[in-house]
Length: 303
Image 1: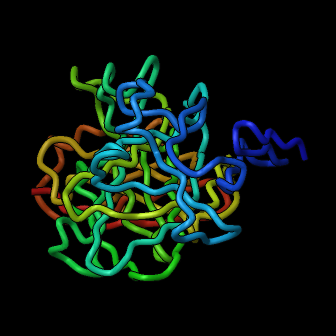
Image 2: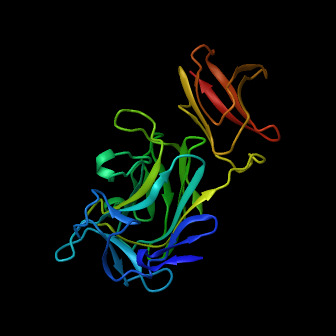
């Protein structure tokens, strides 16, 4: 393992990087890994290294509303280097949110030269106990609507953000529970975001106070053999004229069958499709995903 002490992270086999925060001095941090929303090292937005809580070692990253002389609110961006644009990737971190406090993050598309220059929200706004109004509950206001999840206070828990470019989806795993998959977001000009460049950790409200530790960025090999544990997304459902279909696993065929078992529509080879269903009669259909070995079926309602 090659350790880069000055940058506070290390490269690992099978991982893009890890960061246990231990090599940083307490106080403001700004480097190639921990940058800011507008890319400026102004001390106010910067992530702050704290010894108040730690999952491992003695230090963690603190994000909070902030006040003089430390500055704030913190609006730190975890940079994923040049970003990734294919395959499936995850960022994992440990998180600590004190009781009666809140937290926020979102996934960013391109952050070159900085996040504010692009405003590419790959995910929705992910909140934990937003404004101290929903203790123990969090939400992601994504393109599908609202995905909710539970989380503990006053203890460290794991968060994993996963983006799958092959299927055009992202999802989160919070304290061991996976959220529903949602489609990757679009730019201000309504084009699909094609790169995952970072994670924005922002003090979004006055109750925000949270800590981050043991960060890891890594790729996930995609399996062609098993669909049993894959995520499938068919929306809108019910559908009128068009349906979006995504799979977190590689598939060879996507077919739609009526209740008589007749194939009424077949997609081209791939895992991400937008299908015209305007010609289908109103009723129930089955969307079948196949990789040549296994099959998975999802119900679709045409209205």
